Every structure is written in structure tokens, then in C-alpha cells.
Image (tube, rainbow over all chains, first blue to last red; front, side, top):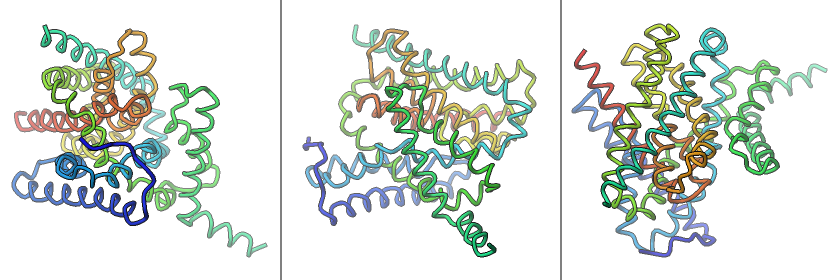
Length: 132
Length: 237
């Protein structure tokens, strides 16, 4: 495996890394569109398909993957920022939140806590069972 | 005087204003988080929106006007999702070793996420369109909106519930896992990815690269699995 630590990049590398991320997403979106022609109910997002494509590419690229790794780590470092515009969208639902806010918030919080506990428990218990 | 108000009209509708405000709010949110010792309660998505929404309401700015500026940030979600390939590739050996725990935890977590939300909302007498909107709350917004629509729910309500679920998971995951006493970061990351999609994954990446990798794969798998499960339910109904 290559050295995965990001060092400062030259402008051409910086743009090339970002371009590869965009091209993987484009390829993913295109594949999803093609699959939708065959299965109209197919609701899988293009970027996730792009992610799987990039995993394959990283394995093939070796040391040449340095620019795309630096771009990806840069973007992931500000991943929370990218959710802010959607989160602000809550402002459009004042009425619904006033009507259903309490029960919905309770359902979301309780269900999220339960899901975390069940998932982590299932993961750890299965891991122990497998390695026994 | 009228020229000043013209300048205000220009500024209030310019994408630059709201793009800039979004970035400043996020930097402030990170600073506040650092002041509070990076407490998970000081979640940057929550703090940023808590600053931005009052500003928009006070200036009478509509969400579509705001989004014209904020869309440039929103757009980067696509390439950022592709970027999750990097922590996944860095931890590929660990992911391959954990195929069986991943499969079992996905099944258990995905069904719990849907079932418990539906059950609690149903106890409170939520109408069918609200139930259909809360069912896919643990998957990323585009998939959840699509699923809510085909189940007869309200896509924009589904999007709100997705964000709430993400922020909730990002806030409670660290204290909850510490209370459970587990230091298994693969399992912790996977759990927050299943429960809280991308916002949970963002939190996992802050904690540790291995947790981030497992959260990313969990988010992708849960998106696919929830879509298959709910589509199957629609076809059988």
C-alpha cells in the first residue's frame, strides 16, 4: 500500500485530485441512470456508486493516488459544513414541527439511541462469536 | 436613503451574502465547539443552523433565496461522499475481516432504526403520511425523500427527520458508547453510520479514521438495505 499521508500539493495535482472525485461521481450517476432504465424503482445514489468506483481505482493507482487522497481528506475534514444548508431547511417546517414536534423528536431520539446500542451490540457479539 | 435600501435589497438576495453567512456561521460554530472542549453537544451542524435560522427569519429571507447561495456548499456533498472511498480503502483489510459482523449489525440496526421509529410514532397516533416520512429517517436525505414519496409520505418532512436523526446520533454517540464501555472503533463507527448516515459519519471521522471508514460503509449499506426493504414492502403490499 502507498504512503497515505497528505503532503502539500502543486496546483495541477490539487485540481487533478478534485477532478477525479467529480469524475467518479459523474460515472456513478451515469451508471445509476442506466440501471434506472432497467429497474425504474432503483433508488441508489450516484455518489455512493462513485465511492465504490474510487475504491477500485485507489487499488490500481498506487502512488499516483496521492492528489486524490489529499483532496478527499480535505473535503472530509469539512463534511459537517456540507450538511448545514439542508439543516437550515428545517425553517420551512415551522407548522409541522409545532403540530408534531414533541412526538417526532421523541421518536427520533429514542429510535436513534436504540439503533446505536443494537448495532454496536450486534457487531461486537458477532465478532466474538466468529473469532471463537 | 433609497440608494441604501437598494444596496440592502441587492445584498439580501445575493448568493454571496448567504454563502458567506453560512461559512462564517460554521467557523463560529467550530470556535464555540473548541471553547467547549469539543463537546459532542456543541455539534457544528446544530450550532450553525441555530445561528443561521434566526438571521434568515429576522431579515425575512426565504429558504429558496438562502439556498441560492448555500447550494455551492451543498453541492460538495456528492464529491465528499465519493471521498469516503479513501478512509474505506485505508481500512480495507479491517473491513474485509469484519464482513460477518457487518452483515449481522446491518440487518439488526437497519430493522431497529425503522421499526422503533415507526412504533413510537404510531403510539402517539401519527397519521400514515407522517409514519411513511419517519420510516427512512436513518438513511441519507436523497434516498429517504425518494422512499417517503413512494410510501405516501411527505418528502420534505422526511428530509427534516433525516437531519434531526443525523444530529441526534452525532451528539449522543460518543457519550453513549463510552457509557457502554466499548473501545471497538470499528463497531462504534459502524453503529453511527447505520443510525445517523452522513452527519454521524462526519462525527466518526472527527473521532478516528477507522471509525470513519466503518461509518462510511455502514451509511452506504444501510441506504441500499433500507431501500430494498421498503421497496419490497411496497411490492408485497
